[in-house]
Length: 303
Image (tube, rainbow, N blue to C red; front, side):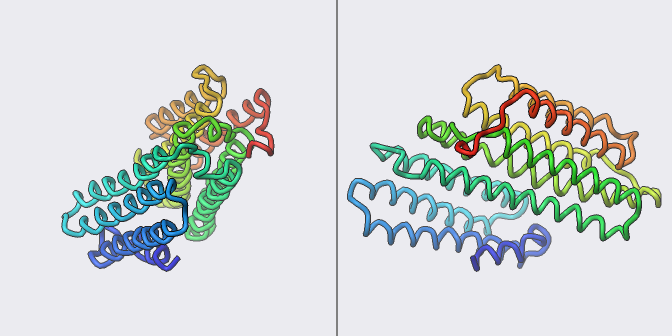
């Protein structure tokens, strides 16, 4: 937890202040080193058949920490490539560890994992809602900014509804490979929700600035619409793992909506921020209504 506090305290100045960047790296590496120690401690208490599994988890964390610390010797922007390599090592570790098990199901609880993922989805979405609130208060309640924030909140509700009513977890029980696809597919889900939160805040600020002649550029539109597109692609992929059907109607509808959002971002230059966010809201509402009408909600047993 202390390492995570270090990450949170330094993340805002990463890439700007040398000390903050170093603190970010050291905090992250410290977290991985602590995880390594915990796994090595566990090795003493598990049967011999499980020790390769535990050792590979420890090795993945240790090697990942070493890669992250080595990034301090690399100037920017090459440092970010080293970070990506460190993350790759950490993501590869569990995959290799599971391959040592005769029964991969012993490595996780099939009902506990979806609950954890769902809670983390709520946390990330909550941060997005917080961004809406912060963006609104920073504009002194400019009417166009408040309207944009209201649309953003409706989109957040759609994001919540689509995930918790229409994304299942049956893929976890299909075997190790689908389980990893299901779990790692959530990186796109979380990244998309986080980007949506940032994009909404940028739209709110742009709406307030528009009264003073400020603009709303393609980058800001892509953060919002592109974040939602990434989220929709993520849940489409996760449900593809669950259902195993390429032509599934919900999957195709989500991918088509994601493509439409990207097109809106590219062609939305003439639109003021409230109008652009309103269009995005209508698109997400239409998809949510469509899935609610034509798809059975995910049962509580599958969440």
